[in-house]
Length: 248
Image 1 (cartoon, rainbow, N blue to C red):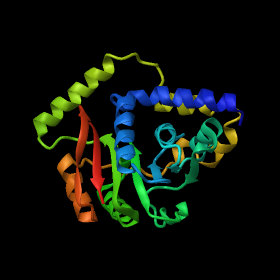
Image 2 (image 1 turned 135 degrees about the horizontal axis):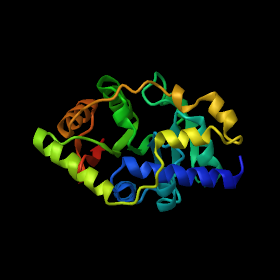
Image 3 (image 1 turned 45 degrees about the vertical axis):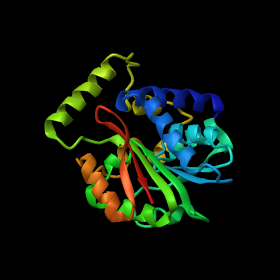
Image 4 (image 1 turned 90 degrees about the vertical axis):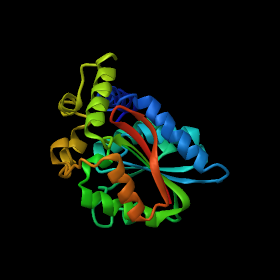
């Protein structure tokens, strides 16, 4: 895959992702701020980006923390190859499906994790799977390490949740629509001969089943505390879009 091809498809990926994450760039900045603060003074922090896609958040973390080892973890080989061709050696790319048995072992980690981040990925997991993933991450994080999750999470009160969802939708409507969504990106990618070999391996129609969950903010806090995190809560919110931080 040429660098030009990778750059074109990564740019299109980032544009269509704007549809699904309110104030995506600000959320990434907040998440990077948290990781930078928690790893302050660590000469070589280990950071995981779970469900990384091509590596939009991971690349920003690598730029903010040039001495860190940043792993971009995703189940899709096409997205990982696009990121590898575009962002290069700043990241280590690992193909793994979050929540599958042994998924953390496949990352070949040689020391405790300092920070694990995820952006709009963990809501795909069912409650039982998510609870297990929280426990697995808590077991691998160093004391004082963090899990930072930027995702769609409902406020606890029903009416407040409805209003928050409305506010987020209005915010999205006020910004330019690129015209591209998830389905159209994958449909167009399938027509690019440079991407065909990777699409044949694992295209978007063969992704792992999306169990999904409708957990509220308090539900997540409860699961995180049960998993072994000492503190958990939201540090940023716009509509249903939250950044949650859990401290090991």
